[in-house]
Length: 166
Image (cartoon, rainbow, N blue to C red):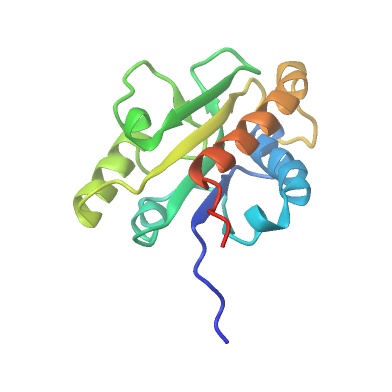
């Protein structure tokens, strides 16, 4: 018997030893255990300390993608939720912290060209303030973690609509 392919790939970005950069890790650690089994069984989680264009290219056809990261260029502690299409078109200086090799816009553009289209999906992030080596969050991120957790849960529910009863 083979396992069914996941319907949602969650990409959890950030460095575990860099202050606010690890917010996505902390939030997903709260979200996943609380998910009902019917949702959890439809998800694959990929840890990507640095979001790379190949991560986006490798999203399977028919699979949605949720990218979770800390962002700069917004108020620390604030939550950002965008479709991948909206994220690819941003020009206001807001950028995911874990896009180092290319800008997120460039990575999404390359993925779109190689794949023929962007994967369906969303981005959820929290504004960060402190990225030095530390296991502590800044105060705004600490205060914003419950909202980040709720936004991730909502994005999962939006990307994995309820199945019809059989």
